[in-house]
Amino acid sequence: MELQDFYSSHGQFIGGAWCPGSENASVVVNPSTEVALGEMTPAGAAQVTEAIEAAWSARGAMRALTAWNRSRLLRRAATLIDERAEALGRLVALETGKPVRQAVGEAKASSESVDWFADEARRVFGMSYESRVKGDRYLVHMEPLGVVAAFVPWNFPLLLLARKMAPALAAGNTLVIRPSSEAAGATMALIKCFEDAGFPAGAINLVIGRPGDVTPTIMNDARVAKVSFTGSVPIGRQIVAQSAVTLKRVSMELGGHAPVIVHADADIDAFAALAAPGKFRNAGQVCASPTRFYVHESIAREVEQKLVAATRALRLGSPLDDATDLGPLTTSRRRDAVEKMVDEAVSGGARVLSGGTRPSTMERGYFYEPTWLTRLQPDAAVLNDEPFGPIGTLATFSTLDEVAAEANRLPFALAAYVFTRSLAKTHATVDRLEAGVIGVNTFVASTAETPFGGSKDSGYGREGGPHAIRDYLDTKFVNVAMPADAE
Ligand SMILES: NC(=O)c1ccc[n+]([C@@H]2O[C@H](COP(=O)([O-])OP(=O)(O)OC[C@H]3O[C@@H](n4cnc5c(N)ncnc54)[C@H](O)[C@@H]3O)[C@@H](O)[C@H]2O)c1
Ligand SMILES: O=S(=O)(O)c1ccc(CO)cc1
Image (cartoon, rainbow, N blue to C red; front, side, top):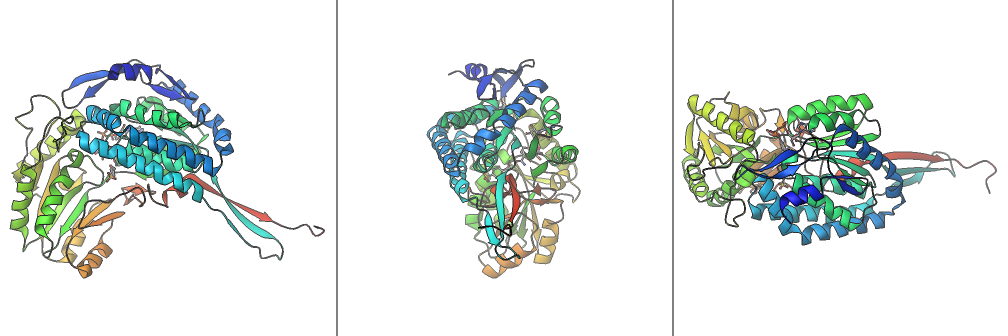
């Protein structure tokens, strides 16, 4: 099916039916060609209210499902996502510019996440314990919150959506989802997997619209009990402030600026082989992307040479080509922001070790060369603001005290990475780092079964792992006193 036909036949998903949006059409652009993939009609505020009403009405149908039923539905959705992974990945590649192999990997990881929460649905345990009054019982029930709103960004439109939908549905909630319009088709195709799995009508609602039409409507509606947001720190702050009006619960998965500490005893070849693809995965548009690389001064020269060589071996090109490692940035505003950061750093005296420009080989598209910068001024924007693009910075250190202070200097505390062969150094470094997730000798910091999230300005709440479902549950205490004349 042509993408335009898919946008027209799908669109918004409200109360179990696909329908067009009520607002003027907007164009979805292919970031690697700058050509329109098609047009879709965004949802207006009235449709967002309809979606909240549908989710509110479907609470009963979701509560009528047993945990085993919810588990079966999630398992079916996971299987469908897995079966459709190639098609889902292709949509992500077209809409966001992510290389197709990485995009298919994202679809598979989304399936794993839904599959993992299919099991979690059956492990929502309450408690029963002895009362301080003989014969009475204290019971603690875990219950769904009701209607949950999920705001999902464009950089991992499948995985980040799956990580919100799966625990919310496993716990028995209903959903109103607002994805980024940049990845409209990929999101619709993922929602279709849940529809085809057989969730009750109204349990899952999708509204793709402009923030001004969608967000205030959701935030001001007291029927929405919780909001889970992934995106930038400034928008996260706005949503937390707005949540006060109706006292919604909030989970925030915001930005990062991950430090990487490479100790003197690290395996340099293994590090360089992981660091180049790790840094430039999805063109650096990953909140956990490794960004500030601190290398022990005794190995700095060798690390720099090997890192630059490994980076030059990466293939930049069409996201639809299986051999591509690096596609374009997803939006022109991201490419422009990256370009500005690099140009300002260079004006301030930074040295470019590789990249530092748009590639001369690509005539169109929001491409930017994988870039390494060194000798940066401490106040350079790239060392302080999240680059969210293909830029890595290199600096040296001599002591753990010095590098730990530098790593923790920023208000972000999402991911951090450490490379060493020593267990003692591993523990000493990990203990000092402020981060929600830490990779030691690896850039894999998140799996379906492990908790992902940050603290400080990087937000709060955890996605993935056994902790995640707690954010979607309410606790009810029941004190069962025996009547004096009970039989
Ligand atoms: N944590 C992440 O995974 C993640 C993902 C995407 C973007 N970002 C952050 O966003 C920045 C760049 O992205 P951008 O140019 O799209 O920035 P942005 O701040 O405009 O938007 C970030 C995300 O929030 C959404 N958004 C914007 N306004 C919103 C609102 N009022 N209500 C609900 N959602 C809203 C957008 O659709 C997008 O998905 C990056 O610097 C990065 O910090 C973070
Ligand atoms: O692919 S993952 O490493 O699991 C991952 C983690 C965080 C984010 C948020 O940008 C995206 C992907």
